[in-house]
Amino acid sequence: MRPLILISALVWAGCAAETTPQPPPIDRFVYPSGIVHRQVDGSPNGALYVASANFDKCFDTGAVLALDLDDLGLPEIGAPVGQAGPVEVTDLQVTPEDTVQIESFAGQLALWNPPGGTPRLFVPTRAEENFLHAINIQGKTTLECVNGLGKNCVIGALSLTRNIPGSVEDLPRAPAPIGVTVNETGGQPELWVTHIEAADSPARTAQNFETYLVRVPNAGAEELSVTSEDFIPLGAGGLAVGGAHATAIGDRYVYATGRSFVAGQATQFASFLLRLIDRTDTSRILDTGLSDVYRTLEARDLVRVPLGGDRDRLYILARAPDTLLIVDVENASAARPRFLVVNAVPLPDGASAIQVLRRGPPGDELIAVTCTATTRTQGVLVLYDTKLGQIVRQVGDVGRQPYGLALDQRATGAARLYVTNFGDGRVAVIDIPNITRPQEARLVAYLGKRQGRDVKQGTSTCQQETEP
Image (cartoon, rainbow, N blue to C red; front, side, top):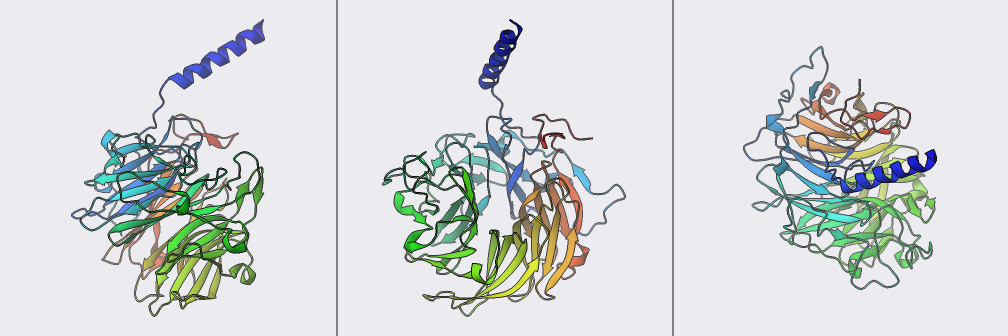
């Protein structure tokens, strides 16, 4: 009889957990992933927007939190780090007006910041409905769901897998969206989304797999929508089906990095390192052939820097081996651009996100990269100097599993970087007092409470107690 009592108790507990609301906390981050910094007129430090991915689904949903950085007591850039080490800012001072709910498993976060208009955040989520969320920013930190339905942006969000007009045999779909890039064109945002799980046709048959880049044509509207024509198949023109992680928008082409992806029950290795989608004719996709020049398992983030004279420079993060690839694109707007690998810089394991700090004319940049090192140790932030052609600084002990990276570059020549630590629930703050001397970069603060962890499982405890 005792086993029956135990089972009954477990069933009751499960039902109680389902019926008791568990909104995401606003006093801490829960598996922070995407992050964006925004400079605000009249504000010395601006605002920071962070996505809580709710990876263990301890709460009903994920969240986006907006932080007023002027209110947090962060040290001035250039101030020495005290003997006690980086400042611990555990009170984020986030009010209910400064947050919205999104689905779980948030990916990258992108900001559209039109001159004189309302700034807007975009974040894809990989939970059940594979939503793309759009969030308006009023003032500095007040967040509102674009669909006008209050603080729960799950309601009315755009699904990238359900009810796609024009779909046939359950295609197209974009399950597990993760990357998002936005660029202002003609007063309206141009938005691209990647995904990391292949879509089968019909659904749940594990047949006829395809992956896509999704172009959202009305990303500035009050209600986002897509049709089947907005899904660009990466296997078009006889190319091998491949997953994509990140995109960068050029004058004619969208650059997309290739990532290993899930097809059915198996993980498929990336079939390309870099592909191009012609913005003037999205049915035209070019494979750059970089995989034949540099062998890698997959790629992650990338950034484009226009060099002038119809030339682009791409900074690409490759994995296995983990490498910063520097690629020049000649005749970048031509029918057949030419690609040249300028350098391949070895990186610590787990290269994830990249930011470019401009210092002078194009080609003189400081490149910042987050690397997890391993999931059980503290990650690092790597700084690569393009002028010297070498890594000039590694800031260690950043946190567990550093992932997202946001940049606040000042006109004074100083810079501040914000790193989401997916594994310990905090945001690391790294200062470069003078970007011409990146060797002086240092960890100055942590934002948020340390995420509780089950040491045996290596996952969150679903509780707010801090680690000893």
